[in-house]
Image 1 (cartoon, rainbow, N blue to C red):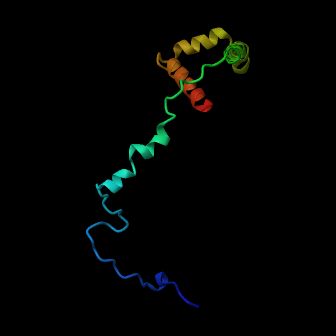
Image 2: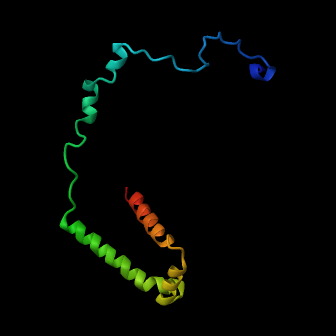
Length: 120
């Protein structure tokens, strides 16, 4: 059975030192050939459609669905929040009033950001 050279303690001979660390990429040249890779002619197909058409506006049906969805969320909160917490709206408002001034706006911003990220 043949052993691995690492098991027996045998390693490769050291590579000659060239000034650059082993595995480092060679320095990039600044001649015309290397700049041709990033020429405008080669990049044109990648950038021709950027900004060519304005974003599509949502239609009336989509706006109506968004409004209905918002109303449904508000209705569920009005009914569901007191039911889920076992507290009245007076107690909920009192606990929100006792929170630090920045906590409610921070939660609204974080919630809107989470919805925005989830939608992508």
